[in-house]
Length: 237
Ligand SMILES: Nc1nc2c(ncn2[C@@H]2O[C@H](COP(=O)(O)OP(=O)(O)OP(=O)(O)O)[C@@H](O)[C@H]2O)c(=O)[nH]1
Image 1 (cartoon, rainbow, N blue to C red):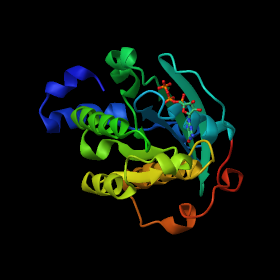
Image 2: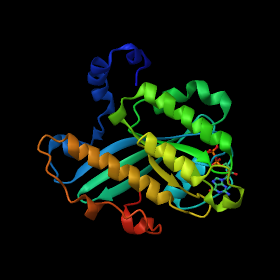
Image 3: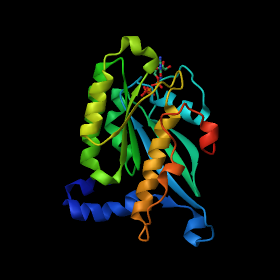
């Protein structure tokens, strides 16, 4: 979002933002030449350095885990997800968590449709930082303009846990956030996080349609309790 919009009163700001926030439609859609719908969404990963943002993105897109170097500026991934007749292209922006990049971070989440606020369950300070990220997003976006997921990563290190599951759950509930714990290393619920984002984005998209009819959502959305099997659920780009 243009930072200058922050000073506008909410109704005005909302109108200005509508243009920015609407998911982009593909040429097929613009021309109305296809019954299939394709949407492009910007999904940004935010969080302190070393919480595992790059590892989550890498696990989701490449289904792999590597020891990674700190991100410089921002990395970029894309992933196609198919839900019913809709194809969604997720543009995943993996921001650098190091303090020295914080002053430019707002440039990366500008125009985002979804944000993953990632913390490390073994580092309490990273949870506190995720809460600060939320405050920043609350200042930049109106409530229904962005899907926000609180992600507690590194569940494979549960023995060193510093952030209780219940505390994070409570916080997420109080702020109406989607909440999940993951492990990029052991591939625990990584796909589910991104699928939850995709389902929520599509649900909101459908609600925006003027002729919206209730959809059988349960058929298209994944059961988030099931173990990961990305290949069964979505198209890989
Ligand atoms: N045990 C464990 N280690 C992880 C997990 N995810 C990431 N790591 C490790 O944590 C370290 C940091 O991971 P990154 O993915 O680079 O973290 P980041 O948040 O992208 O860091 P910045 O780029 O500096 O913002 C690396 O050594 C990873 O291997 C996980 O789920 N479990």
